[in-house]
Length: 499
Image (cartoon, rainbow, N blue to C red):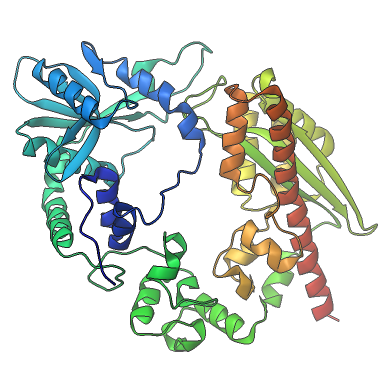
């Protein structure tokens, strides 16, 4: 296809996209699609976090992100001349532009300290690549970068007082100057490859020599970049991106076209399910899996918030705090399904004791408890009982009753071709029933987290508050009702097979 020249100036975000996928860079640089931002809980807390970071600096200039770029660059230039610490300075050369979180002059010396603020618990390689890009721009403008540092979150910090967060204990300052030196050869090679691409752009391209999306499922323009794909394509292979890319380049697009000898046991299950259009069941494994199940069983799900700025005492950054549970209990002898739920009013503070109390009232201690990826539910209860030890005996009694309903799907004891290689509850449920999350206002746990944090931060109207609470309850209810439907489907299949 006929390509346009690069749209200058190129931003840091576009450069980082190139490193992941050259097609993605072209799509965003040419504005072929609008890049959307999914709301998440961190976006609600960014201003508070950045304020805490900025409180460490004196004699600073904060340049508004709301003013026009030219005005921002002029203010940045003046602040540089005055040797001020600059927040959100805009720096631009002939081809590139970057907004820098913080640039601090070296006191009693030459050069500048390049800072990045990251509301995360550990360093990521992308942060170093981001700093490399900014360092390149500054040096092209004749500015010496003396060192590079990152402020992130100390995840072991315990919030105990209920007062202001202790900045020195909460923040972790990491000097990454030496790491940038160690990675410099690789980063320079990537930079050179980027410069070459700008002078001779290709789109769309999918080859061994080009970086590209790990999966077409994350592609901005799937119909353009992967126009030949249909249901049952090679990219549905579990644990097989590299082999999928190899086969795609060879023209083997359909799962059924893959040689069985090239596939792992679980990939063969996928291939055969696709070829025959039927679900796979490993009946011996399922029989053993359900051996210790009681006649009355429970299905449990929590929703939680994990704020990066702890809100309840005691708690840590990113610790999951449950605010809602959904519980379905099915008596197979009577074919009766009970439903219980509790959502904590956001204005009433720490929800953990209330969650434990309400759940302990409703959950029998002598029945099997199914959750999907039950590690999460067990962690929620474990950490809550550490804060409220009067529930520890109850927890020790029910802990052995948990069974992970995700296990048969992760192990491929059960696989339906419509799962398309995925093993999430949202993908499995429609293959096991005529029910799905599709019509709900809240469809993902991340959104539930975000919505409840909005309530805690009082960022909703009173009218909207009741709607959000109802949406949260409906979402969590669908999860446990879905677990019940999946469980019943599997049990019925076993019963029929054993007749």
